[in-house]
Length: 388
View 1 (tube, helix red, strand yellow):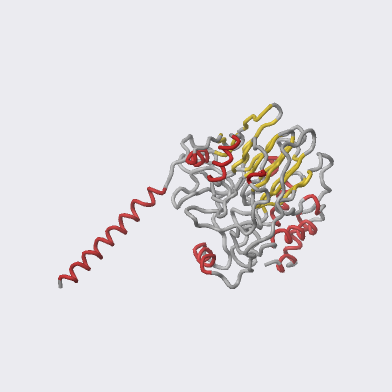
View 2 (cartoon, one colour):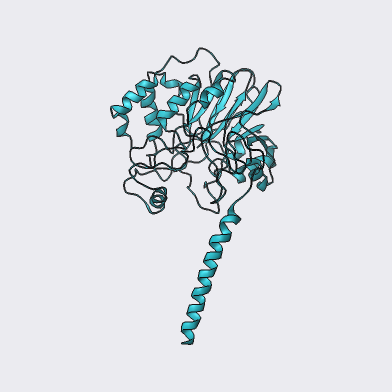
């Protein structure tokens, strides 16, 4: 009888502890990253997409987000295999690129090094082995294309939002300790970055910060969401960027869905774009899916490229961390097919190898007119159905 009473007491206190945890822990995990007046994309507490919040994982066929996460953890026989590791040929960028030249090196995922006009720009830097907190999260299948010790001195860092595969505090701290670069991000993310003892300049959409004479960064709209924990969803803003440069602008899309599809033209209105970095991966969460609310796939990436004015572009956000269900090389192969369907110059928006440095041509005549209708026609005809 005494043992039974002890067991019942333990059970009671366990229930009480669980109830307290369910009440207290979510609030503890919430964070207030930004305080300010309400706006077209901030309700006074959380940010939102003014063109509609469809940013949660959209899985057709009745598949839930929880089901997708479970399949990622325990395996899914329906999804294509990924390589455990991919061979990478690393490169050592020059210290500076002067004059009218522009050099771009894809380090992996969304990390891109752009060198132009004597300025070294690094977008969404991550050198960590995992993209997640406390040792959790997807692991790299591809090493960084530039060893950290081979990086030139970085002058400017762009941080698009606070997801772990884009805001890597360990890497930002290493760069800060070594180079003291200017870090530009969107509202609220500066307080997250400050947790690593690193200073950042946080701007709202449409705001600009001067870097040096003739060079500035404008934080621009895209379509995404933000979170580091379970309860801090959309406490900080997400963005794309336009870096204005004498020889033509650099556009970094960050991490984004299509939304209303008007934001690329807004970026192009700031001046001709010489180079664009556009995501093409992590778009499939169920068989046959071509995009999700928060991630464009290769087809919508072509539409974004057209909205930017068809500049020279590098596809990013694929081939480094497995975040979704498409095959490892599905994004670049599907992109090539979509560009062909659009009747576009396929070399203007084509994949490059991790670690490969490419010389970006000077501004000139835009790529020949392409037709989005051609991509839609190919989709209706099932041209893209062969890509898993």
